[in-house]
Length: 208
Image 1 (cartoon, helix red, strand yellow):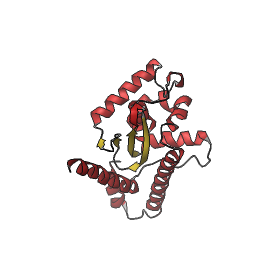
Image 2 (image 1 turned 30 degrees about the vertical axis):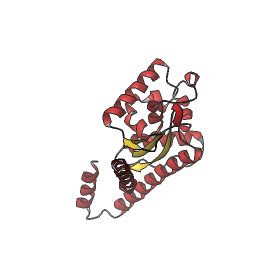
Image 3 (image 1 turned 90 degrees about the vertical axis):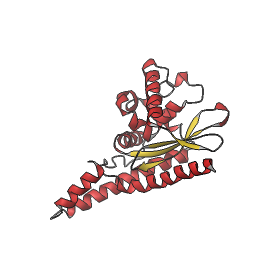
Image 4 (image 1 turned 120 degrees about the horizontal axis):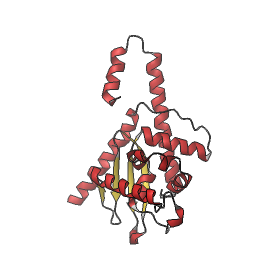
């Protein structure tokens, strides 16, 4: 019973996170109108720097690594780890920070499969998979050019999603969130006369 309640709590949180996508503001425009890889990379970089994300990472059975099974915009960044027995738990901030720092050290040493495919054994550790997600990249954005301008990273991160469909679904969800935010911003600008107090309240609500 306790386990079931724990999973239900995470599921409820995921629903809240999904609805929070409707409240995302201050996002960059969709510059990547084309379907080329450069556009996708730019979209990912922009999203990871501007948007929060709810991401579910699944631990594969028999120590075969981890995969991103779902990811969508949210009003708060949350990482859920789904274990082989189906149980789920939310990673703590300390756990996430530790994983990001460990992977950053590997990147500096040239031993991370994310930036050096030659050291890959076909599987990726939790830290590498985390940094492949929007959530992880945003949290680890201080790594900067070590990730965003690295072609190996841009290629490797796609393979950390459970399927091409999972990657595409994630990409489209962040594009829609950005487009929705842009429409909201345009509406506010077009009808801003006499609405200074409303605009100010909105900025305060989102911390912008």
